[in-house]
Length: 79
Image (cartoon, rainbow, N blue to C red; front, side):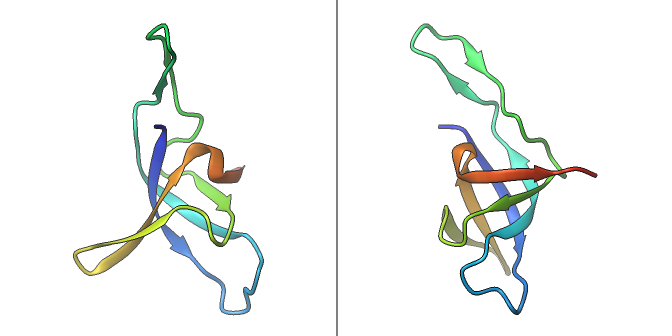
C-alpha cells in the first residue's frame, strides 16, 4: 500500500471541512502485479488536504499523527 505519515493541522472552526497536514514520512510507492514500482506523488514536507475522517490516527510518543493512503489525499498545496 502507498501510505504517508504526517502531523495534521486542524482549524478550530472546522466541522465537516477537509483538513490539511504536513507530510512527515513517505513510503517508496506501490508495486504493480508485474512488479513495477509506481512512485508516490507526494514528498516529505508537502502540505496536503485530506478528508476529515480519512486514514488512521496513531500516537507516536507524545505526538499524534495520521497515516493515510495516497488515494485519501484530496490535494497537494503548492509552496
